[in-house]
Length: 109
Image (tube, rainbow, N blue to C red; front, side, top):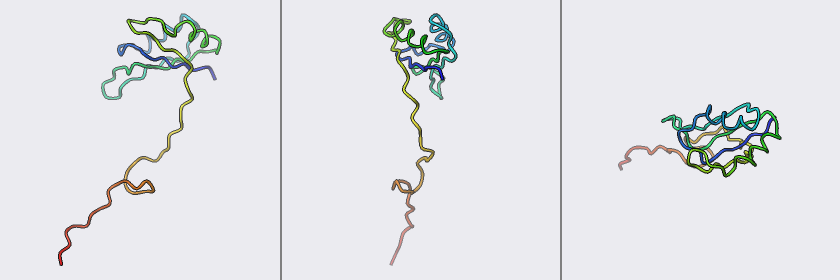
């Protein structure tokens, strides 16, 4: 698998296509994904870029980290592996203790 890079401090208006063009100057980019807000569609200021080979990914880190891009100083480094997420989602009861526990109406004597 090719090396994946984290790109931070992006202008919020940056598109995936613009990002791909910027990094393609270094070498063959296989993927460029700007992370967007699911409600507004606006960029969150960071992205992930994947190169076809590790040598170009390393070169991109050296050449683009700390450079100015549309008024912002880019942060470019190797992305950490994605953390596994549990499939359990909040809700009622369970071993976590939270949740709604019912309440039983009023009890009169």
